[in-house]
Length: 493
Image 1 (cartoon, rainbow, N blue to C red):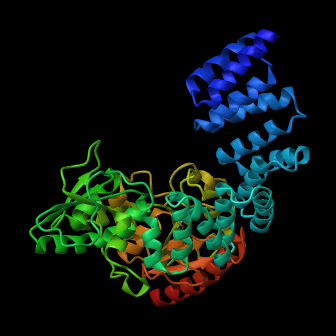
Image 2: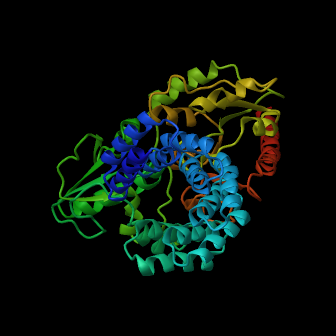
Image 3: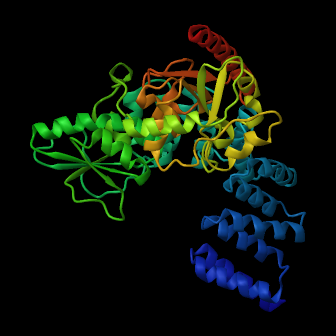
């Protein structure tokens, strides 16, 4: 026993000194001798959590909890690991158990608040995080989580006070700058928001371009976020090309291969479009696409919202017209409208549980007469409509190669109904009518309490009146669609 305790003490010393490999090796040797040693199981899990492997952390700490269920710290760390593994519904009861055993566990209080926030239980999240903040005043992570919850409850002044308190102690803390920037952007204070947004990660060491005349320099524009962000902000690329050309410079646009064909067709006459490789192409200065609004000093009245700025190849449009005509979608009452549906985003997105819609909630839309629906859903969610009784909606995405093909499909639709994912940006960039279903706490770019978007004139926004209430949102959309379909049927006659 003394030998194992000595070995555990040595392992903990490695762990506390930041020697992760040595600590992991020491923990393994102890568990080879005693597979149920609870402290070692617990600390092995903590080490894995600290190195970013939340799934492994859950497995190890769960074993520690089974061996010694009365110890509060493993329950707290297990709950935090479950939250980090993006399973807040599992984390919440575990953290409740941890706090029953130790009500003064600040980490568990914070993790409980963050888990409830992820579940859109904002008042409960705020209460737990306020308890954590009272227990350890000035704790940066607690204040940051509390500020984010307050921001999502539209308590913006209180949220800014939390973020400011963090930045007063840690002026270069990027996540606090970004959290404060999101609060400003969603309220329409775009110029202040863009400044805070510059604290996000950047890939290149070359000097950034911030709107100044580039002389004869080569400017590299590049993606630094997702597909939707690239589609939204590539609208600025021709403006950069005009500035560069006036001074004898040029612009290179580095994009993802799935966007290459679309961007090259629409922008390639004045910009060299490349697919992203391991190394950036030769350039003098660079600008992430999401930094272009800042470079142009964009405020709400200044948004360049002329559409379309992206368009598919006419040959692709014709080919997809034939394919869509061959699909056997439901026709009710002499269908006159072709409507595309997307109800789920990338499941890896941190807010996907709030922005994606259960397929069964679409039934009010699907029952509207006079509409031919077609699914543009990708991923595992695409099969969900097939499981609904009496529903037959064909999926058009099987032969889609890239966003140029998706654009050609959109050009053949009367309307797209979608959640907040990249295809909404593509429809907006093309000027295709699009109804966007938004959660109660929207992404910053959709602002607050408005049914239109200053970024995309063809979008109409349908918002949840309260967290999780898709029934009201889709019921409203179904009523509007029913009236529109009836008008289309009368016109077709």
